[in-house]
Length: 216
Image (tube, rainbow, N blue to C red; front, side, top):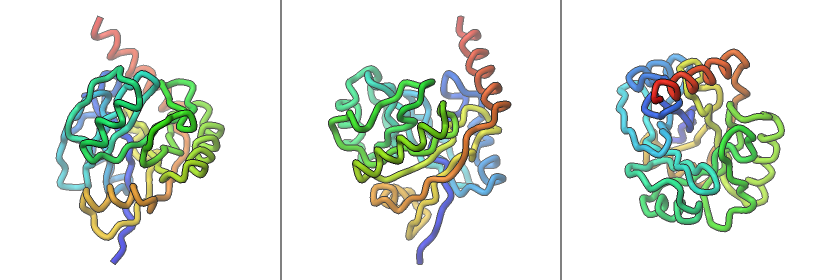
């Protein structure tokens, strides 16, 4: 039997320095928006949370020297600031699914996968927070086709109201973590979603600024 799971593969909580979502409500919010699961991908931090309502995929968004690298299934942190090649090698040793998130985004540290001289499993072709959305999406899809990599999508949510703005439909034989990760590696994915609203972009910016000011 084949299942089709709806998964937001890029979500931050208040454990990231620029996000505000309470980890304890992620499952409830995701379920209310029709999601079967989310990947918790804090910045340079593994922050395992549990939910009885949805599948939680442990992850991390690592700040490599060239830009961000997303790892799904990660359970250990890796040093930030390393060359992307070294970052990806350390993540693959954990048997993670490695993803290049938000390529071509003008507002985040981003890696052009066409210039990356090492293997990854997937490219995030839809990220709701990228600017400009349509151009970034088109370029990311082109890169994924050229490199013959899986295409995935995530909201890159930093506040509760953006969870599920983008998601990946994953065809899998089981709702288990291992099965989902294998499906992503194998390209049994369909990226879906749209750009985050202007209102929610402003809310996200306010959250980021507020958290930065609180650390001064």
